[in-house]
Image (cartoon, rainbow, N blue to C red):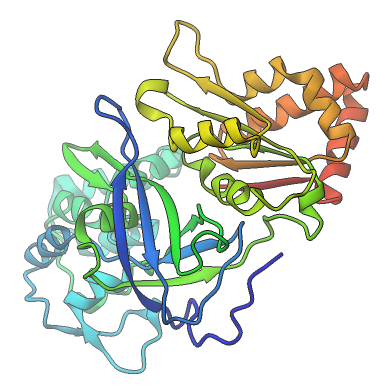
Length: 390
C-alpha cells in the first residue's frame, strides 16, 4: 500500500513548511545514546501517509560552522553566488547557500585537486602531494570522511578561494529520510519520528548530524518552520495484511516503522499475529516505547516480543541471536506464510539478520545451504522479505 499525494501541491521539490509539535527524549538518564521522538504537524498540507512511508526533512547547517567558513575566506556572507550544483535562475547570498543549500561536510577529492593550484606554502604543497599520491589512494577516503570543508581550508590556509570558486566545489545539502513511526489511523495529521541524534568528535572538533541536530537543537517546538515531504516506499503492509502473520526485526531506531505497523493492525480484528524483535544496549535506559510494547503484549496485539540487550551481560546479545534461539517457531511462522521485515543499520545488523534467516531455513527447514539461499530469494520475490535499511 502507498499513500497518494497527487492532490497535494507539496513534494520534494516543493516541500511543506511544517512545525514540530513534540520533541521528547526516549532514553532514560545514564544512556550512552540520545534517541528522540518527534511529532511533525502536517495539517493544512493536503499530504497523507501510510505505514512504511518515510518523511523527508530539509535541515539547515549550524550557524557557527557557517560563520567559521565566512571568516576563513574573508567573506561577509552577502556575496552573491550561483553554485553549479543548484542550477539557479538567480544568484543567492553566500550565507543562504551555506546555511540551507550546500553541504559543509563531505569534501570531495576535487577540492584537493583544486588546492594543488592554489596552495603557496611549501609544507602544505608537500602534504597535499602525499595525500594525492596514487600509492596512498586507500587512505584518501577515510582522510576526507574525517573532515569538513572548514578543516581542509584551515589545514591548507595558504590557498585563497573566492566565494564562487568554493561553492562550485560543494555538494547539495540533501534532505534526510526518516521512517515514519505512526499510523494514520492513530495520528493522521501528526507524523511521528524516532530519531537517533548524531553527535561525535573528530580532529578535536565536536560534530553533529546535520538533520538530527537541526530537529533536536535548532528547531523551536511549534515555531520554527521545517520543510518536509512524504516519501512513498516499497516497504509496507500488503492489502491482505490483517490475515497475515508478520515478523518485524528492528533494533534501535529501526523499531520506528514497526511501531506504525502494530498501530495499524491493532484492533482491526484480523487473525494476523505480530512478532517483534527489538534490541539496544541496556534494557533500563534504551527500551524505546517500553510501556507501549508491554501494553501491546498484554492486549495480545503483539503475540511475541523478543528483546536483545547487548550490554546487560558479559556476552553481547543481538536480535540475530534471538532469532536463532527462536528458530523452530520462526520457521513455523514462515512456513505458515508470515512476512519477514527488517529495518535499521545496513552495514552490520541487516547482514547479520540475513545470515540468521538463512541459518533458520537450513536448520529448521532441513535445507542445504543452496536450498536456503533459494528459499530466501523466493521470499524476496514474493515480497515476504522486506528491508528498510540505511
